[in-house]
Amino acid sequence: MRKPWWVTPVVAVTLLFPYACAAPTKTATAPAVPASFGGTDLAWIELGIAMDQQVLPLLDLVPEHSDDPAVTAAAGRVRQFAGTELTALRALHDEAGLPPANPHEGMVMPGLVAAGKVTEAATLTGAAFDAVAVRELRAYLRQASSLARSEQTAGRDPRTRSLAAQAATTHDAELERL
Image 1 (cartoon, one colour):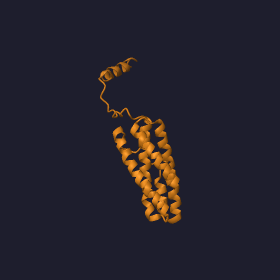
Image 2: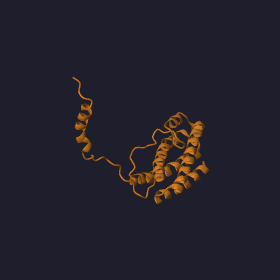
Image 3: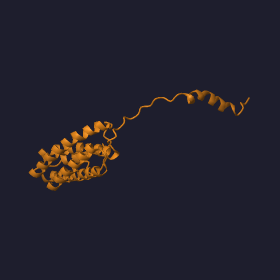
Image 4: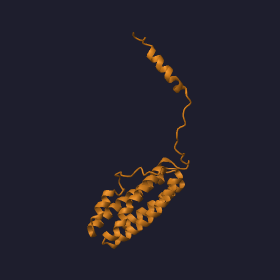
């Protein structure tokens, strides 16, 4: 014996109706970002952290692989300001409530010193190493300066914009020296 055509829909509605009418469940929400931070500020903070973190392994190689005192001196200056900048960026990152994961990890982007470039540089010494190190440092400085200027133009948070102004000046000066 066949069931009437309407039995299956009626049974389905009867069984699912209590769930459809139930109160919505509470879902986790992302923490609110303080109003002083805009999207450009947040993007610049995250990208700045990634760039500074990824240049450090290259800088670690310089003392043992470079024969050029100018490259060694430049690496020391970059390490100093990248470390200071990284500390300030991390403080802004935490204040903005950004997630701890690095969204730029593994990306190939201008100015980000890729792990493969560090691996390549680690196999070299002298002039060959210096050529790779200088090329990567120039790319890092150029892109960091460009992004910092964009933050100054489009950023909203005054402290982030101030850090960007300082970063652009420092990166530009080092780029000219290099």
